[in-house]
Length: 94
Image (cartoon, rainbow, N blue to C red):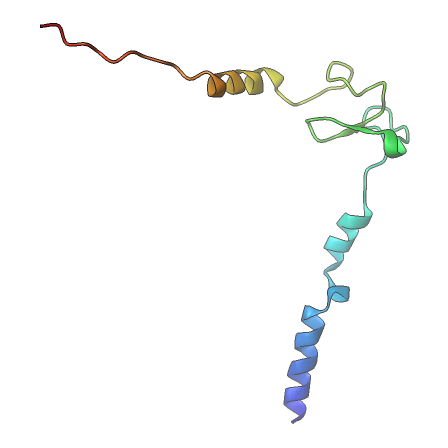
């Protein structure tokens, strides 16, 4: 009987949302609210760049910060994907 209660208690502890691992709770609480360029507080007005960093209004453009995102290759891939190469079928000459 005692073993059944212990098993039930451990199962309910694992299923309860309050007992989440500390890393998940830390990730939810920890949000970046400073500019990655000048460390200024941005609050709600921060701009998230495609490189994944948060920036203020002065550093939001890719030429104003050291952006690691490759815009050229992404643009080339998009153009190649939207405009496939069209080739005519070969005609046999008689």
